[in-house]
Image 1 (cartoon, rainbow, N blue to C red):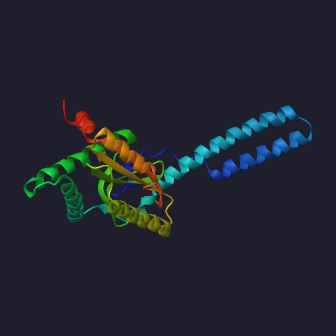
Image 2 (cartoon, rainbow, N blue to C red; image 1 turned 180 degrees about the horizontal axis):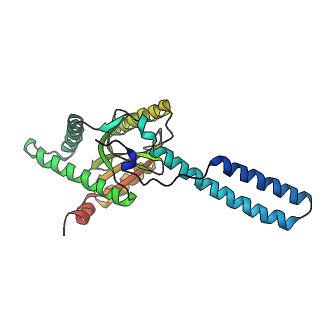
Image 3 (cartoon, rainbow, N blue to C red; image 1 turned 90 degrees about the vertical axis):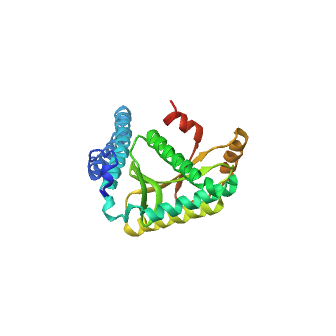
Amino acid sequence: MNSSFTTFTKVSSPATLTIIEAAVVFLLAAAIVAAAASGYWLIAFIVFLALIGTLVLAYFALTETRKAAAATDNASFDWGAAVPEIQKQNLNVEVFELAKILEVETEQMSDLQSAYLVAEDLALRQIQQEEGIPLMRHVTLCNSPFDAVYLKDGIAVCLDVSFLVAPEIRQEKIDAMMRKIAHVKEEFKRLGTVTGLRLMVVMVTQLTPEDEAYLRKTLNSGTFSKTPVDIDLRLLDFEMLQRLYVTS
């Protein structure tokens, strides 16, 4: 497996050396002070505008430098494809919980597994379209399994997909996500990686409008308030995804 993040990210060209930017800022600031001290206020104002422009340029230069560094930073990452056994275990846990909610008979479990796999696939397709960047599906990052991972703007985004048929997400599921992403954060810190980290929770829903409104209210009430990293919540309607990618 090609484990280079550069395969999956749009890497920008290297930025101007930060030390040169700092020197230019210092010289412009000194010029402002000298012009103001001499009473040349118009010149001081013009140089001040040049200083503002330089600071803006420096900000974008640092952003580009971070992205370029992150693109080559993955050599220290402990990650790869999730083994089939882990994928199977995760699938069985999710489907078993769905079966309890829906009161599905044993002989219908295979149909429920198929529905879950379709929901997950369509959700990842949609996220890929929205973000405009390829996803690496079913990978382990620092020995923590995720449904997908992608790198964008110098940040590794870890995706965890849930299929909801009731207006709530299990606390056990939330706790498991928090443990995984906290572990990755600690490993990134230990390795000294410059790549940022974010968790994206993707919820594929099959709910009534009233239940979906209740779910959104619950999520806004601080369900994910104790996250160790920045979090991005995405709600996707299962029927909408099917209309978009499956039905003609």
